[in-house]
Amino acid sequence: VSLTHDIDIARRSVRGSVRLLFNRHVPGGFGGLLDSIGSRFFGADNPYFCVPKWTKLESKFGIKSTYFAFAGPRQHRDDPVYTPDMLSKFLENLKSNNCEIALHTGIGCYAGDKIAESKQALEQSSGIKLRGLRPHYLSARFPEYWKAASECKFSYSSALGFDDDIGFIEG
Image 1 (cartoon, helix red, strand yellow):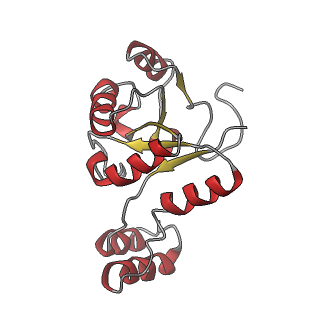
Image 2: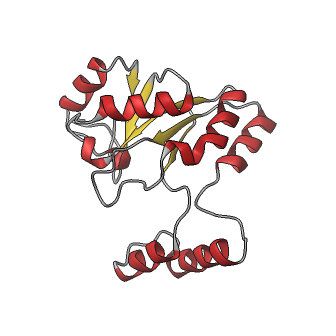
């Protein structure tokens, strides 16, 4: 069993929550908008970024996870909007807790494009040699994605399934 987390949102903006509400695609619905308002204007916890809570809980139980962090370039409107530098404090904490940090590629990397650039950005920011990667929303074209990952010297890709169905690609 492998416990993993995708870091998709460092902070959801009020504007972003309103946009998602109008598109009827808000995780958490109207409550998601209220969470964003509370976080932005009243100092409430940001419910969309739980890395500190997860690491504390995992440490309590002696669990080590893999955290997939995005490192651009942002090529699709649904790609994460943070940079690795915005996560530097949290990446340092993950390293000090011996958690694995891996690359979370953007949607625009689905055919393997820009994987090398994304890897270099996260390695430079975090000071770690990355071993693994996973595409955002598991959006990848195979075998092109795996070929590009191999050429970039990744040891593994956790892109084996679908974001909306149970099972493996091609059965």
